[in-house]
Image (cartoon, rainbow, N blue to C red; front, top):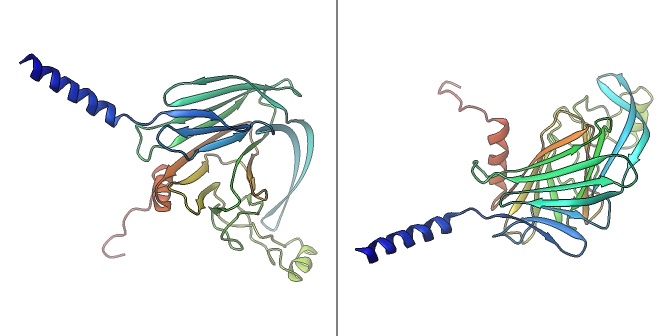
Length: 276
Protein backbone atom coordinates (compact mmCIF):
# COMPACT_ATOMS: atom_id res chain seq x y z
CA UNK A 1 0.00 0.00 0.00
CA UNK A 2 2.79 2.42 0.95
CA UNK A 3 4.68 1.54 -2.22
CA UNK A 4 1.57 2.27 -4.30
CA UNK A 5 1.04 5.62 -2.58
CA UNK A 6 4.67 6.64 -3.10
CA UNK A 7 4.46 5.66 -6.77
CA UNK A 8 1.30 7.71 -7.27
CA UNK A 9 2.76 10.79 -5.56
CA UNK A 10 6.02 10.48 -7.47
CA UNK A 11 4.19 10.17 -10.76
CA UNK A 12 2.02 13.17 -9.92
CA UNK A 13 5.02 15.33 -9.04
CA UNK A 14 6.81 14.32 -12.24
CA UNK A 15 3.69 15.16 -14.25
CA UNK A 16 3.42 18.60 -12.64
CA UNK A 17 7.12 19.23 -13.24
CA UNK A 18 6.82 18.19 -16.90
CA UNK A 19 3.94 20.61 -17.45
CA UNK A 20 5.60 23.58 -15.74
CA UNK A 21 6.04 26.52 -18.11
CA UNK A 22 9.54 27.57 -19.16
CA UNK A 23 11.17 30.32 -17.13
CA UNK A 24 12.46 33.67 -18.30
CA UNK A 25 16.26 33.78 -18.38
CA UNK A 26 18.67 36.69 -18.72
CA UNK A 27 21.91 35.80 -20.46
CA UNK A 28 24.84 38.14 -21.07
CA UNK A 29 26.79 37.27 -24.20
CA UNK A 30 29.37 39.43 -26.00
CA UNK A 31 28.06 42.78 -24.72
CA UNK A 32 24.45 41.80 -25.40
CA UNK A 33 21.80 41.12 -22.79
CA UNK A 34 19.40 38.44 -24.02
CA UNK A 35 15.91 37.83 -22.63
CA UNK A 36 14.91 34.29 -23.57
CA UNK A 37 12.85 31.37 -22.34
CA UNK A 38 14.66 28.45 -20.77
CA UNK A 39 13.39 26.05 -23.46
CA UNK A 40 14.25 28.25 -26.46
CA UNK A 41 17.61 29.38 -27.83
CA UNK A 42 16.04 32.31 -29.69
CA UNK A 43 15.82 35.46 -27.60
CA UNK A 44 12.58 37.40 -27.38
CA UNK A 45 14.54 40.64 -26.82
CA UNK A 46 18.27 41.44 -26.97
CA UNK A 47 19.76 44.74 -25.79
CA UNK A 48 23.26 46.07 -26.56
CA UNK A 49 25.44 46.77 -23.52
CA UNK A 50 28.24 48.56 -25.40
CA UNK A 51 25.78 51.01 -26.99
CA UNK A 52 22.88 53.13 -25.76
CA UNK A 53 20.07 50.57 -25.60
CA UNK A 54 17.86 53.27 -24.07
CA UNK A 55 17.83 56.97 -24.91
CA UNK A 56 15.37 59.59 -23.65
CA UNK A 57 14.96 63.22 -24.60
CA UNK A 58 12.97 66.38 -24.03
CA UNK A 59 11.63 67.85 -27.27
CA UNK A 60 9.63 70.92 -28.16
CA UNK A 61 7.43 70.31 -31.18
CA UNK A 62 5.60 72.73 -33.44
CA UNK A 63 2.88 71.19 -35.57
CA UNK A 64 1.57 72.52 -38.86
CA UNK A 65 -1.68 70.99 -40.10
CA UNK A 66 -2.67 71.52 -43.71
CA UNK A 67 -4.82 69.53 -46.13
CA UNK A 68 -5.23 66.70 -43.59
CA UNK A 69 -1.44 66.31 -43.31
CA UNK A 70 0.93 67.07 -40.45
CA UNK A 71 4.33 68.72 -40.55
CA UNK A 72 6.52 68.81 -37.44
CA UNK A 73 9.39 71.02 -36.41
CA UNK A 74 11.29 69.61 -33.46
CA UNK A 75 13.78 71.21 -31.11
CA UNK A 76 15.83 69.04 -28.75
CA UNK A 77 16.02 70.55 -25.26
CA UNK A 78 17.88 67.73 -23.54
CA UNK A 79 19.03 64.28 -24.60
CA UNK A 80 20.13 61.43 -22.31
CA UNK A 81 22.02 58.68 -24.12
CA UNK A 82 24.34 57.12 -21.56
CA UNK A 83 22.30 54.50 -19.69
CA UNK A 84 23.97 52.67 -16.83
CA UNK A 85 22.49 49.45 -15.42
CA UNK A 86 22.62 49.51 -11.61
CA UNK A 87 20.58 46.47 -10.68
CA UNK A 88 18.93 43.44 -12.29
CA UNK A 89 16.19 41.59 -10.44
CA UNK A 90 15.11 38.27 -11.88
CA UNK A 91 12.31 35.92 -10.93
CA UNK A 92 10.91 32.86 -12.66
CA UNK A 93 8.66 34.76 -15.09
CA UNK A 94 9.80 38.36 -14.98
CA UNK A 95 12.92 40.48 -15.03
CA UNK A 96 13.49 44.06 -13.89
CA UNK A 97 16.41 46.18 -15.05
CA UNK A 98 17.03 49.35 -13.03
CA UNK A 99 19.44 52.07 -14.00
CA UNK A 100 20.24 55.71 -14.51
CA UNK A 101 21.64 58.03 -17.13
CA UNK A 102 25.13 59.23 -16.39
CA UNK A 103 24.56 62.35 -18.50
CA UNK A 104 21.14 63.31 -17.02
CA UNK A 105 19.45 63.33 -13.58
CA UNK A 106 16.97 60.64 -14.57
CA UNK A 107 16.52 56.98 -13.65
CA UNK A 108 14.70 54.25 -15.53
CA UNK A 109 13.13 50.84 -15.05
CA UNK A 110 12.76 48.27 -17.82
CA UNK A 111 10.55 45.32 -16.98
CA UNK A 112 9.74 42.23 -19.04
CA UNK A 113 7.00 39.89 -17.82
CA UNK A 114 6.20 36.46 -19.28
CA UNK A 115 2.43 35.90 -19.04
CA UNK A 116 2.46 32.13 -19.34
CA UNK A 117 -1.07 31.82 -17.90
CA UNK A 118 -2.69 33.89 -20.66
CA UNK A 119 -3.73 32.78 -24.12
CA UNK A 120 -0.88 33.10 -26.64
CA UNK A 121 1.51 33.74 -23.70
CA UNK A 122 2.48 37.35 -24.43
CA UNK A 123 5.47 39.15 -22.98
CA UNK A 124 4.74 42.57 -21.44
CA UNK A 125 7.46 45.19 -21.80
CA UNK A 126 7.32 48.32 -19.63
CA UNK A 127 9.73 51.26 -19.52
CA UNK A 128 9.18 53.98 -16.94
CA UNK A 129 11.18 57.11 -16.12
CA UNK A 130 11.62 59.00 -12.87
CA UNK A 131 11.16 62.33 -14.69
CA UNK A 132 8.03 62.58 -16.82
CA UNK A 133 9.25 65.76 -18.54
CA UNK A 134 11.13 63.54 -20.98
CA UNK A 135 8.74 63.01 -23.88
CA UNK A 136 10.83 60.87 -26.25
CA UNK A 137 11.92 57.27 -25.68
CA UNK A 138 14.27 55.40 -28.00
CA UNK A 139 14.73 51.64 -27.47
CA UNK A 140 17.53 49.95 -29.38
CA UNK A 141 17.42 46.16 -29.76
CA UNK A 142 19.04 43.48 -31.85
CA UNK A 143 17.95 42.70 -35.39
CA UNK A 144 19.49 40.52 -38.11
CA UNK A 145 20.61 41.29 -41.68
CA UNK A 146 18.27 38.61 -43.04
CA UNK A 147 15.33 39.63 -40.87
CA UNK A 148 12.17 41.01 -42.48
CA UNK A 149 9.61 43.38 -40.94
CA UNK A 150 5.99 43.13 -42.06
CA UNK A 151 3.05 45.14 -40.77
CA UNK A 152 2.92 48.73 -39.45
CA UNK A 153 -0.68 49.11 -40.50
CA UNK A 154 -1.69 49.80 -44.09
CA UNK A 155 1.52 50.40 -46.02
CA UNK A 156 1.13 51.30 -49.69
CA UNK A 157 4.71 51.71 -50.89
CA UNK A 158 6.57 48.95 -49.02
CA UNK A 159 5.80 45.38 -48.05
CA UNK A 160 9.03 44.57 -46.22
CA UNK A 161 10.12 47.54 -44.09
CA UNK A 162 13.66 46.29 -43.40
CA UNK A 163 16.06 49.11 -44.29
CA UNK A 164 13.32 51.74 -43.86
CA UNK A 165 12.29 54.38 -41.31
CA UNK A 166 8.50 54.14 -41.06
CA UNK A 167 6.62 56.94 -39.30
CA UNK A 168 3.34 55.72 -37.83
CA UNK A 169 0.90 58.57 -38.10
CA UNK A 170 -2.58 58.47 -39.60
CA UNK A 171 -3.00 61.30 -42.10
CA UNK A 172 -3.85 62.01 -45.71
CA UNK A 173 -1.64 59.98 -48.02
CA UNK A 174 -0.84 62.93 -50.24
CA UNK A 175 0.27 62.96 -53.84
CA UNK A 176 3.40 61.34 -55.14
CA UNK A 177 4.48 59.34 -52.10
CA UNK A 178 8.09 60.35 -52.74
CA UNK A 179 8.13 59.39 -56.42
CA UNK A 180 9.73 61.89 -58.80
CA UNK A 181 8.85 64.24 -60.36
CA UNK A 182 5.26 64.38 -59.14
CA UNK A 183 6.13 64.68 -55.42
CA UNK A 184 8.24 67.77 -56.06
CA UNK A 185 5.36 69.52 -57.78
CA UNK A 186 2.93 68.46 -55.05
CA UNK A 187 5.19 69.98 -52.39
CA UNK A 188 4.66 73.41 -53.91
CA UNK A 189 1.01 73.14 -52.88
CA UNK A 190 1.62 71.36 -49.56
CA UNK A 191 -0.09 68.16 -50.64
CA UNK A 192 2.90 65.85 -51.16
CA UNK A 193 3.00 62.54 -49.37
CA UNK A 194 5.87 60.18 -48.67
CA UNK A 195 6.33 56.43 -48.77
CA UNK A 196 5.01 56.02 -45.20
CA UNK A 197 1.91 58.27 -45.18
CA UNK A 198 -1.16 56.16 -44.54
CA UNK A 199 -4.75 56.34 -43.34
CA UNK A 200 -4.22 53.41 -41.00
CA UNK A 201 -0.99 53.40 -38.99
CA UNK A 202 -0.43 50.61 -36.45
CA UNK A 203 2.76 50.12 -34.37
CA UNK A 204 2.69 46.35 -34.85
CA UNK A 205 5.00 44.19 -36.91
CA UNK A 206 5.95 40.56 -37.46
CA UNK A 207 9.56 39.40 -37.78
CA UNK A 208 10.31 36.68 -40.28
CA UNK A 209 13.80 35.31 -40.72
CA UNK A 210 15.02 32.32 -42.72
CA UNK A 211 15.74 29.12 -40.78
CA UNK A 212 13.87 30.35 -37.70
CA UNK A 213 11.99 27.84 -35.62
CA UNK A 214 9.90 30.56 -33.97
CA UNK A 215 8.77 33.97 -35.20
CA UNK A 216 8.40 37.20 -33.25
CA UNK A 217 6.03 40.14 -33.18
CA UNK A 218 5.96 43.47 -31.34
CA UNK A 219 3.08 45.82 -30.64
CA UNK A 220 3.45 49.23 -29.00
CA UNK A 221 0.29 49.65 -26.95
CA UNK A 222 -0.04 53.39 -27.43
CA UNK A 223 -1.89 56.13 -29.28
CA UNK A 224 1.21 58.34 -29.34
CA UNK A 225 3.21 58.92 -32.49
CA UNK A 226 5.89 56.30 -33.03
CA UNK A 227 8.74 55.75 -35.44
CA UNK A 228 11.01 52.83 -36.25
CA UNK A 229 14.54 52.95 -37.60
CA UNK A 230 15.22 49.66 -39.40
CA UNK A 231 18.13 50.86 -41.54
CA UNK A 232 20.90 49.18 -39.51
CA UNK A 233 21.29 45.52 -40.54
CA UNK A 234 22.02 44.44 -36.95
CA UNK A 235 19.91 46.77 -34.82
CA UNK A 236 16.42 48.25 -34.71
CA UNK A 237 15.24 51.37 -32.88
CA UNK A 238 11.70 52.03 -31.70
CA UNK A 239 10.96 55.71 -31.01
CA UNK A 240 7.91 56.75 -29.01
CA UNK A 241 6.69 60.32 -28.43
CA UNK A 242 5.73 59.70 -24.81
CA UNK A 243 7.23 59.52 -21.31
CA UNK A 244 6.62 55.79 -20.86
CA UNK A 245 6.53 52.72 -23.07
CA UNK A 246 4.17 49.75 -22.91
CA UNK A 247 4.50 46.97 -25.44
CA UNK A 248 3.65 43.35 -26.01
CA UNK A 249 5.92 40.79 -27.63
CA UNK A 250 5.12 37.32 -28.87
CA UNK A 251 7.18 34.35 -29.98
CA UNK A 252 5.29 31.70 -31.95
CA UNK A 253 5.95 28.69 -34.24
CA UNK A 254 4.07 30.21 -37.20
CA UNK A 255 3.42 33.78 -38.45
CA UNK A 256 -0.33 33.14 -38.44
CA UNK A 257 -0.11 32.38 -34.73
CA UNK A 258 1.23 35.90 -34.23
CA UNK A 259 -1.73 37.38 -36.10
CA UNK A 260 -4.10 35.43 -33.87
CA UNK A 261 -2.20 36.59 -30.78
CA UNK A 262 -2.40 40.23 -31.84
CA UNK A 263 -6.10 40.12 -32.69
CA UNK A 264 -6.80 38.43 -29.36
CA UNK A 265 -5.61 41.70 -27.79
CA UNK A 266 -7.23 44.29 -30.06
CA UNK A 267 -10.38 42.38 -31.02
CA UNK A 268 -11.68 40.53 -34.07
CA UNK A 269 -14.52 40.99 -36.51
CA UNK A 270 -17.58 38.93 -35.61
CA UNK A 271 -18.66 36.28 -38.14
CA UNK A 272 -20.81 37.63 -40.95
CA UNK A 273 -24.53 36.83 -40.70
CA UNK A 274 -26.05 34.35 -43.11
CA UNK A 275 -27.60 37.15 -45.12
CA UNK A 276 -24.33 39.16 -45.31
